[in-house]
Image 1 (cartoon, rainbow, N blue to C red):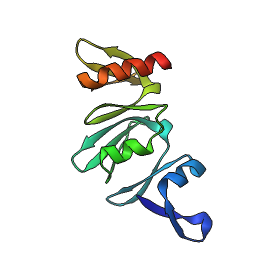
Image 2 (image 1 turned 135 degrees about the horizontal axis):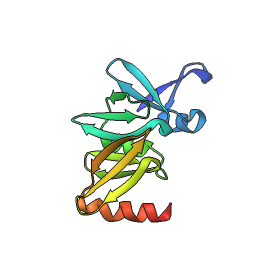
Image 3 (image 1 turned 90 degrees about the horizontal axis):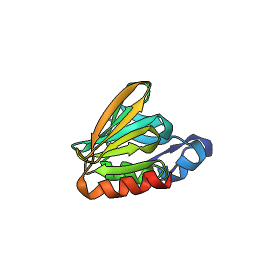
Image 4 (image 1 turned 45 degrees about the horizontal axis):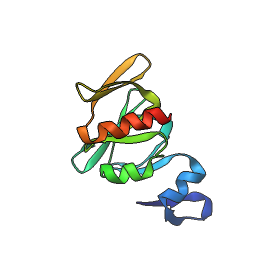
Length: 131
């Protein structure tokens, strides 16, 4: 993904370089470019050829990037892919239900239940132990 960097007289640069200088992620949406701060993200889910961000303010934002591209842009210390269709922000993780293979994310007393694949359940538990 590429975007415009206004600081350097309109030169096009790689988005990953801009992440370090702005701390916001740049994504294309149907209507233009969307800027999202990683801290605002509760989770991201696949939606066909799009990715849907569920944000802490209760809004959702759909971008025209596949989930694996989004995964590569998110800081790995805070985010983990829990299934083929979801990435969670571990700072909002409250519980892991191993019997039902799901995790519970919570912010502002609102809970989100996300299915966790059996293959990724172990890596999620390990990541939580490292926190």
